[in-house]
Length: 358
Image (cartoon, rainbow, N blue to C red; front, side, top):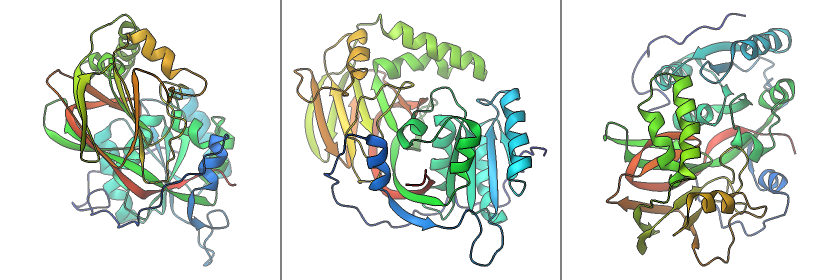
């Protein structure tokens, strides 16, 4: 099975650029069990359950597997190709090496009639899929082959390839929330991004800033990791003004601001254990005056960020606005995406995600 790169876009106005499908807001989910993965799935809104990928007509559903060559190594790619050829021969494999290529693929996917797009990569790859396919009928599956795989951890999607493929080609599809960020990109142009897990800014977001100007994926990742280490030694804090659902909650020195649709960041840190991906709300946490090392320690606590802490504020919100006179970088789903000022909004139930069977 040979991977092919997507052609140039056939036409404008494909699924990536169409208006969003209206989705009714869901009520506040107050039932929060201790087992976060089971709770996520029990409260998920099932929108499509079929017998594998065979609809009633008996014809195979058209499935595309998109591999991010930036996060999937050559050996892993060969293993994936062998698995697909032997077990899922009907899937078409595409290789993308940049966001631009993924967007060209997304524009083409609608014209080719793909019902399901399975992405092989990390959180950033899934973020690209969410950005392009939210509000469309396309179902999105995940083969977690990235560095941190925080969203797979949240949903209980296994990282072992064959087990992950069983989920991705399975029959349980849920409607999950998606976050929208309006901000300035690295060229300081107004842009819109979607994210599915966590957006953050402050010490960790600023640490990722050095990776923006680095050329090449390997250099970018190395600089990103080095930046996180350097952040632990930093004590500088930007001053941020925060507006939560229209209410100004203060302009304060802020070590870290976290906006959670999901719960995990940084390869296993779970600062927002109360966040739910299908309740139509963000969990928002502001860590005020604290050192970088204190931020890391707080995020790494077993029960998440403390609910009662003199330097931590918590909110549930559908929209927040953040401004600062300081240069503050934004990171979403592990990727540096832009700079403040920014606004964050929830799109309830706007992405069809393939999830583990209950």
